[in-house]
Length: 171
Image (cartoon, rainbow, N blue to C red; front, top):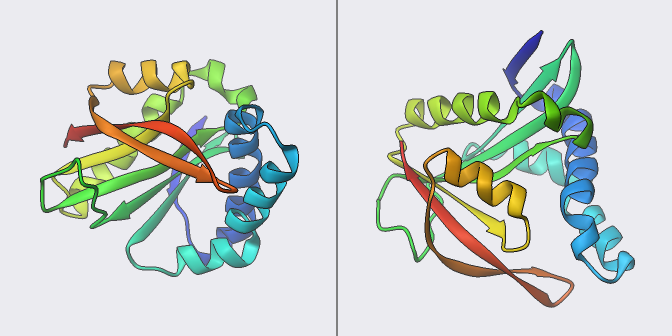
């Protein structure tokens, strides 16, 4: 059974662990220096950092469960701006990740649809996100779900830039 819930402060530990594991699985192999990966994970997916983020009223987290097991999560930031986005009421889908073992279940679409509905409830008109140019599976997923390439930006890890595509979708 698939269940998606809006995360709360009670979910901080689960979110931090999901964030750390899913980011490492999806992006860790692209970073040459594994010490940079560990540093990035420690800075961005600690329990303290996750608690700080979930307490910010502009940041919304959602956890997807498969048979009561946390399988992935999404993070939406309302009122997030980007130079490639001209709409006033935009939001950023900063993270949408599934643990690798759950990707074959094709539940990413369910999580994305849920997050899009939440964004509409939060009065957003457009959703944007970034994807690393070498992450072909993610690029195909977003294109299949009607996101359009609207630009590029550099995602920086330990001072090194990684070229990302900016995708956007009217919601």
